[in-house]
Image (cartoon, rainbow, N blue to C red; front, side):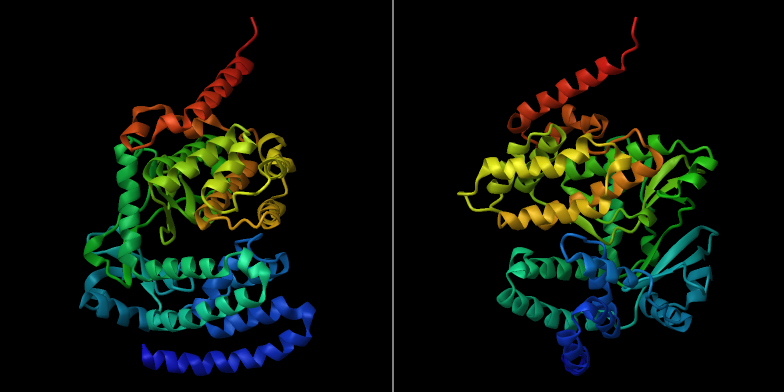
Length: 447
């Protein structure tokens, strides 16, 4: 660690001064210069850049747009390194462990790359192989990033309101978990167990983990053959009812979040797949999983239900109760602003929504009241926007923000079994039931 810290100190210092002076004087090129610096600094910074790219609203729009270029600029490492890592992790050569492994990776990311492979018994799998020496480099890089965040908060109010040190701490926790592939494997097992518990496993599935070939730096899992959630034309061409399966997938995601206090935290299109040969929908890549405690779950539940029933004052109350704002905030004004922001999500035609402005609008409203929105709330909203984007493509009559099928499990004994205090949300549950009745009446055929 000390050796890597010394080396990274020299590298980071050189790159910092290489880009700092141009950044000071070339204001219009600042996003490009910062992105170039991140790419020169390597995997940890590219990973951080990918978070900036996928978090419009948390970061200025011009930076989020520029860092989109980080999403597909991660070079693969050599297959000789793959061979070396497999031997190091399993104690055997790659040819002794697998019947075959494709040398060209299916995908290369900042932490690892993925190869198609076949087990000795003929089972098709994929193996996720961690980049060489990435662990030591990440730990050294995080030392610098933490200090950079503290300096930024000291000098810039917007950095304090965005809770930049909190973002970095969450990033540090996330990337440490991603460095241990056994954690990702346990996340997949947990997801599949939850689906079995609720008799949902015939419809929704995560890849099976092959633990005999899984270690801290090597993950071996079932290979899914499917169609990405946003490839509607291909899915419907194979006779898939995309609206039906999208609703099933989102209901499963809601169920894990609301009942079991954990949720897949990166539902981009590559991680949600229609599986036509299995008649299922599949979730992959469980490196990012959001979790919260029982109290946080009640806040999330109240927030989601208030959102669904358009109870904007309750939304404002939840924000105060989680101590995101001071107690002397103007609740009525805050609720009115939330209504202006959220109402289009619930009432406007999906085709009319401008997704690029939703999360930035939420963040601007938060800053107006000095709100520091908890990471879990931001992560949840991001996943809801992912789902709503897929609905816009494949299920134009579906609004994922107020479809009551997606939360109907809250009316079953399973909710109480998982420790949910239904009395605390009884009034909002009644409002949901009333909405269900109105929807049923409006959809009933006329005599």
